[in-house]
Structure formats: structure tokens, C-alpha cells
Image (cartoon, rainbow, N blue to C red; front, side):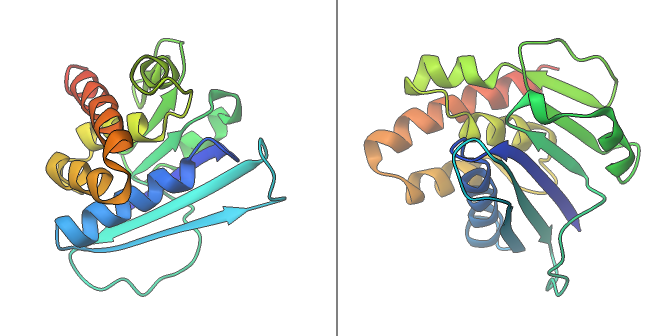
Length: 176
């Protein structure tokens, strides 16, 4: 089972990223998947969490995810080194939207906000981070399934831009 935790702030689209991943895995890759949020105070800018579980068999656990295969940060100010303890094994990794360079072998960084600004005209980096995640988690979800999830979940004009942003990040992740 693959378990992913998304960290972001209200309005950044972290739960939308988790939902898109769930749709991609369940509808387009024919796997079992869960996507669910955890909110504190529901306001823009407040920290929020999104969770995914993906498996080839039925998933019965509905609890929040502590140990993860991937931890995705849409906002680097939420990152703390203590989360390295939340990684399941040596293949697990943390993906961070930041202008900084990777400072640990289990951390991969991308300036997703800049990609989003250039392709979408908005600083909403959820589909960029989905592309970055998909480039590393190809054994959990396919690139094609993610693209179809974006296409089916958004208006055509938005979908085209978000697919472009997804593909840029996917390619950058594949080159690391």
C-alpha cells in the first residue's frame, strides 16, 4: 500500500491535489484509493492536510496517515526535519515546493510556485506537485492516469494549463 500525506495551507489546493491523485489511481489506474482531508480552523492560510492511500486490494483503514511513502509540501514554511521520522523506508521521500536546493538525500525540491505562475498565471501549485510526485511514484500511479484525472475534473481551459504544469514538473522529477 502506498500512503501519501499532503501539507499545505488553506487555498493552496493541497486537498485538491490529493483528490486528483485518488481519481487518477481509482478511476484511471483501476486501483483502490482513498483521498481525505484534515482541517483545523477552516480559513485561508491555515495549515491543512490531505491524505491518500493507494493499493491493489480493498483499503479498510480510514485513519490519518502517520508513516508515509511520500510527504508532499505545497508550502515550505510548514516543513520541519522531524518529518523525516515519518518516512516508511529508505525508498520513501519528501517533496517540497521551494526555491531552495535539496539538503537531504530523501528530500526532492522543485519551485512549483514559479511553474504555476508561468503556466497558470496563479501561485496554486497543486497540479505541479502532483506531477512531481507522479514522476517518483510511478509504481503507485501512472502519468496518463493523472492527466486524465486533471482533464475530467476541470474545465477544458483550466485543464489544458494544469496538464502543461503537471508535465513540466513530471519531466523535472524524472531528470533528478
